[in-house]
Every structure is written in structure tokens, then in C-alpha cells.
Amino acid sequence: MEPLEIDGREVQTSASFGIVLSPNTFERAEELLQSAAIALHFVKASGRGRFKVFTPRMLEHAQERMTLEQEMRQALEREEFVVHYQPIWDLSTSDMVGFEALVRWQHPERGLVGPGSFITLAEETGIILDLGRLVLERACRDLAAWRVGDPSARRLFMAVNLSNKQFMQHSLVEQVEDILESTGLPADRLKLEITESNIMVNAESALVMLHRLKALGVQISIDDFGTGYSSLSYLQRFPVDTLKVDRSFVGRLGLDPENHEIVRAIVALAHSLGLNVVAEGVEESGQAAMLHKLGCECVQGFFFSRPLEHAHAAEAIGRMPER
Image 1 (cartoon, rainbow, N blue to C red):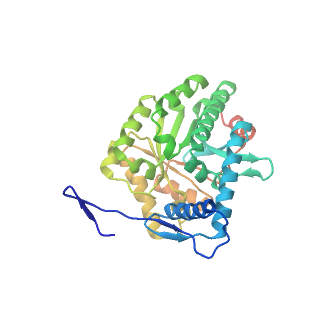
Image 2 (cartoon, rainbow, N blue to C red):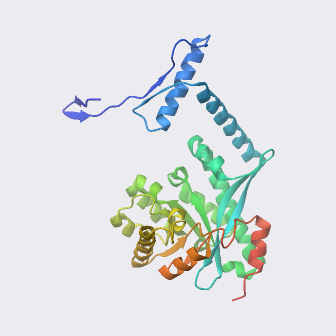
Image 3 (cartoon, rainbow, N blue to C red):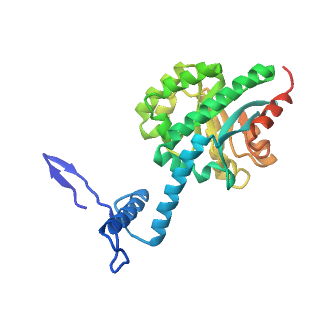
């Protein structure tokens, strides 16, 4: 659309449309309006400034989303969400140095459900705030308990992902502080992971939040590094400890020379800023060998270990050599 001039300022507008075609089978005006609203929702989800024509499949999808949302809220009440722990390894010593906490849904009918099936909707509906707090609290409590039961666990850190909505909460710092105090986990044993894209949505606000979190004594990691856009000037100002190389780069190591150079550049950039590097999604010995040669300190992935249930994670700690 052509820009408008209002009070001497140029204003650019756009429009999105949800359309229901005639003839149709609707008997009430409410059904017609609901169907147009559903089509409009699909437009907004795909980028706005467009139009979509309503189809019966859209209604089915909306009903499935509503059912899933209701099931997720019930799952929180019934404590069906569980936390698994994927070990993180030091490439130089082959020692386990920490875990990443990963949420799973122990569905009463579908069994163990991975986050890919529910995290996006949890973000859209705000359920992620309660779910994220649950994961953070449980992960801190578990590591604190392991530290009491096994001295080897005192060398480990716990990495926990923060969603965009969690990271933008004004009460996040107080929430993290309360969880650390209630669980007894030392702050420096918690590593909060925030994706590069979430940080850069509002870099100035993110900078303030990161400094507040860092003041608690926790570690900060930029997750999925390289998949978004980071200003080097901001990266120098962010109080972070770790850059995490995205699995999309790790998976192409040895297959794509340009990709190899990208990983080399990420590692070099991290080291120039005094940061360490964790590579995720390592599934082959060759990938681990190349990452070690490039100077990457730590790795995680199926080649070393799949995510472990609570009891198996405790067993893995018990197998750690004494130091």
C-alpha cells in the first residue's frame, strides 16, 4: 500500500485478510466470522500483509491446537512433564563437565513426546512461562541433590534454555535468584542459554537483562550461534561466557569446506573475546575430531550420549573419575 502522510510524517500501513468464499455450508453468522478469523490467524502466522482463503483443514488445525493447549495445561497440573539431561563433554580430557536440561512430555496415551511437538504452541499461548520455570527449578534441584550425594557432581554445571518470553519477563532475575536460593545450587553452577535471535530482538534491553543475570553469578551462553544476526559491537558488550555452535553447522562438518570455515571462524571469534565454545549435535567421531582440531572445548550429541533420564544421569555421575 502507498504510504500515508500524517502530521508531516510518512506512515506505512499494511492489511491482512481472512476470506471465506461463498457458497458455503455455514448456517449462522458466528460460524462465518469464526472461519474468517481462523483464516486471518493463519495469515498473521505466515508473515502478515497477505490473505488466505478458509479451508476445512484450517478448522481442524485450530481444533487440534485448542485440544493440545488444554492437554498441556492439564499436563502441568498432573506433573507429566519430565526433565532429561544430556551430558556435555570436555574434548581434551574426555570428562563430563555438565548437563543440558531438556524437557519431555510423558503423555498418558502417546508415551514420551519430544519438545518439537509442543514447545512452539507453549510459546504462543504463554504456557512456556510455567513450563520454563518448572524445568529451571527441577534442573537446579536435581544437580543440587547430586552434589550432596556425590562429590564428583560438584564439578558439573547445569545448562538450561530460556525461551524468548521467559527472557523478556521483568521478574526473571528474581525468579532465578529464588530458585537458586530454594534449591541450594551455587549460582556459578547454572548456565542460562539464550538464543542469538532472542537476544537481538531488542539488543539494548537484552544487554540490561544479561548484566542483571550475570550479577547473580550465573553463567551465560548464546545458543544456536551463527544462525541469526549478531552485531560484533553488541557481542563485545554482552556479558557472556560461552558461544554454542548450532547443530546445523556441526552436521555439515567434513561435507562442506565453507561450513568448516564458518565453524573455525566462530571458534576463533569466541576465543578472541575470551569465551569458550560448546558444539551441539555431534553424532560422528569425525565431527568430534575436527572440532577438537579447531579448538572447540566442549561437545554434546548422540555420539557421546543421548539425553538421560534422572536415574541414568545420576549413574553417569557415579562413573566419573575422582579428582
